[in-house]
Every structure is written in C-alpha cells, then in structure tokens.
Image 1: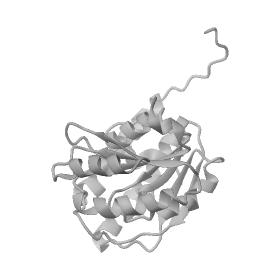
Image 2: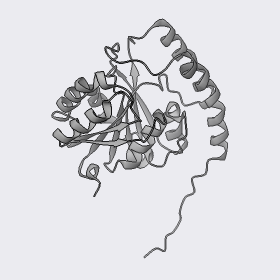
Image 3: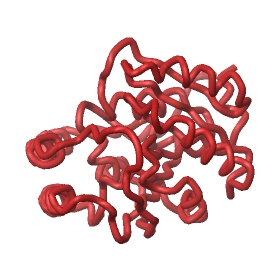
Image 4: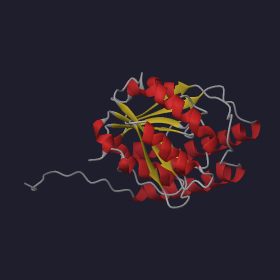
Length: 244
C-alpha cells in the first residue's frame, strides 16, 4: 500500500541541488507536521536528479523521519515533472506544494488549508517579496501576460505554496512548463481557485534555479501552448456505468 494513503495531507517538495537547505528543510517541516491543521500530514521529497550529494541526505532524512518519504529521478527533468510525479504518487485527499529553498513558510499551509474543502486549489500570494528587483519585475511582467492569455484572475501563479485537492491534481494535463499554469489548469478542469496572502523570505542558502530566460521568456511562449491545449481539452461526463 502507498504510505501516503494513511494521511490527510501530503506536502510535495521538489528538490534539485538544495543540499545546503535540506537540514533546515527537515527541521521546519518536521516541526510543522506536529501542529498541522490537517492531521495526519506527511512529506514527499521529489529528488529531481540532484548532483550535489543531496540524494543520500534525502534518504537519510526519510530513514529517521517516519512521516517523510521520497522519490528520486534518474536525471533532472524539471519542476513540472517533479510535481506531476508527486501528484501521481499522492493518495491522501489533499496535496501541498512548497519549494525546498524555504522562501515561503510551511506554517502558512494553515492559512490555505481552511479553504481546501470549498476550493480545488488554494494558492498563496507572496506579500512583501524578498527578491531582487529584476526577479520581481520579470515576474510581474510574466504574471500580467499570463493573466491576459489565460483569464485565470490569479495575481501570483508562481508562488511556491499551494494546496490542491488530489482528485484534481492527478488529472491535470501537465507538460514541461505547465507548473506556471496550475490555477488555469484547475479552472479548465472545472475547479475553483482561491488566493490567500502568505509570507515570503530571502533565500539564505543554495542557488536559485531560475534566471531571466526561464522566468520571463519561456513563460511568455508557454502561454501559447496553454491556449492551444485549452481549445482541445476534453473532459467527458459519464452518464452511466456498467462495470459491476
């Protein structure tokens, strides 16, 4: 049996070359699990082909923490692939997403979880972002363009703190770059989205994996891919079953 089926909430954490952050990540998430608003909760670390020695540390963490589990890719596939694998492996009713750099606070899941019954996706809005001017400016441009193209009404789709109903997460048509469109994808599948302000912190260890090209130019191009897919999306309603 998949161990996550025994939990109410699974926190999915994509990890790529974040060895310096892993001890702090373990400590913060373990502390949160003791007081979560959705008990019992667990953590699923998705090792996206790390090459910095972090893979061994992830296994060590999971061996001493009974509520921590992991998946490891054979190579680096990217954030969307890590989320897709995490959603596919998750069998708890709710799935969460947070980045390993801890620029968002695990405790803020408790700001999102109260809305998770009514909304298919609850996503954070980073307040007082502690990023560089270039990062904030490129993110603002990309978000404005994406809202115009998708009409999802979400102001901060890139916020790495989300709670999603697993039933929706597992049926989303994800492909490379589509992590930027989770709110629009959920809406396309018929789900409702709620935005909630959350805290944001500067990165204190490790190296950012995004630069101007993959933070600005690629999202602009991906919007056309989303529009193409949305026009061809099929979600048939089954009127009657004869499977017994």
